[in-house]
Image 1: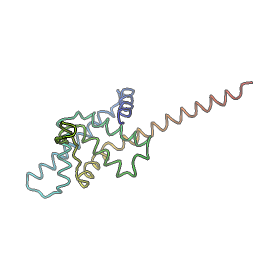
Image 2 (image 1 turned 180 degrees about the vertical axis):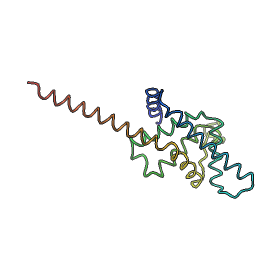
Image 3 (image 1 turned 90 degrees about the vertical axis):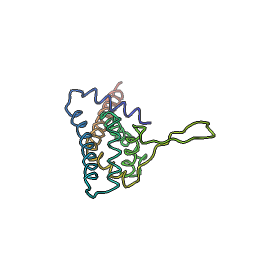
Image 4 (image 1 turned 135 degrees about the horizontal axis):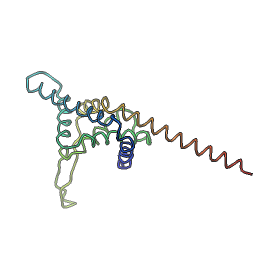
Length: 179
């Protein structure tokens, strides 16, 4: 479901590969990683903090150790394009944020467990969701750092669709003027 959108993001990156934005976006994700390290450092230093925030930070650190930063970026941006094309998929912004959390955490199998399924006669892989409060922290960090780029991509896509629509309308008008 997300693959065509990831492909569109990759095409956009390829088209603009010389732009500094991609290293800046990657740096923004790495800032989330540094924030997660700080949260755990504070915890180990005995400072009080939110357990939900710490759980979200643990997920960020798992991703940082096992997934390339640009893979995370592409996934988040692809979800923004999905939301642009199919707004009915998400009831509201909170639903989009939770889906961002699920899809990004799903990039590593460290956020999954397995169990024996007797009917299938094999192990089943099951992704473990964060507690909703921890998911809110996780999504907030991602949306704050990568969301502006996702929204900008949505606007670029809208502009391209409008240009194509106008060109098609001009063509039809020119066609109708033929005698």
